[in-house]
Amino acid sequence: MSVLSLMVWIIAYPIIIFCIGVLLGGYERKFSARVERRIGPSWIQPFYDVIKLMSKKTNVSHGYMHDVAILMLLGGTMLTLYFVPVPGFSYFSQFGDFLVISYLLLIPSLGMALGVGETANPNGSIGISRALQMLAGYEVPFILTFIGVAMKEQTTSMLDIIHIQQAGGFWAWGLIAHPLLGVAALIALQGMLNEKPFEVIVAPHEIATGPMTEMGGKYLGIMFIQHLIAVPLELTLYINLFLGGASNWLEYLVKLFVLWTALISVNMVFGRFRVDSAVKFMWKISLPLAALGVIGIMLNIA
Image (cartoon, rainbow, N blue to C red; front, side, top):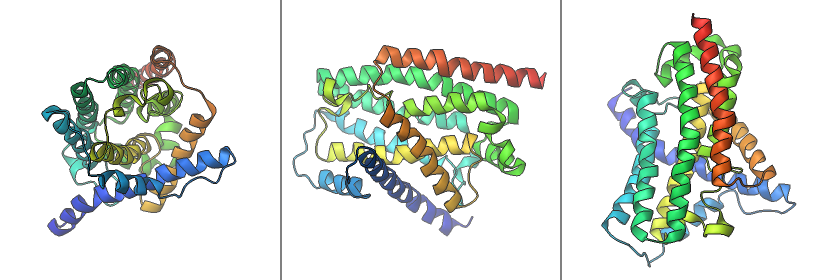
């Protein structure tokens, strides 16, 4: 990759993923509306929401940490994004494997916790407390599933794992070759995306949207931008580890929307777990599945 093309990708990559996130967000609203026999908003309604929020003149800051935390939230997500390979752009994947990605994924959560803590709003504090509990619930099984994949493929490089799956064809996909790990990671992914039944972090009718309670104007706009980037980012992690990655953008988008449709379908059917029930579900269902998958791989190696 030439220096010029690299610079173009560095600038364009977050913009492309943001645009995909807008379409995914609009698709979720449209899908939800159709299920409920409504017309629903435009597919690009999330883009209009961002423009509206970022154009507001009144922006209340609660202190220095509040401002820094918002930058950590968006900056951590964008930094993680560069280490996740997509068709045509995998330059930074050479210098950071999944272990680096797993550390970088914690930066947005830490930033949100610090920023919301600065606002001193009890609803926000409750939301952050729940978010950190849920982090412990889904992060452990998701990391364990990766450990199993890394043991099987003898590499921690996401790019190498993609190449191995693509070389082996459909039957080498992580979800097919290691179904226990694939299902465990899929359940954890539902929690990472804060989709029902793991939506307790925001709980609009209970704690006034939780972490976003004191966020308004450009602060809420930046949080919304971060969310629109984080959704395709986290879906891409699963696609790369368990669905064979993608050799071109058409295949990538098809897998992205099929996976997203499956997750939001669950979101439409189930109610919301309490935070303790959500964590217990992760540790009683997802974690044992991941552990059994790892044990199975260890026995095969042996």
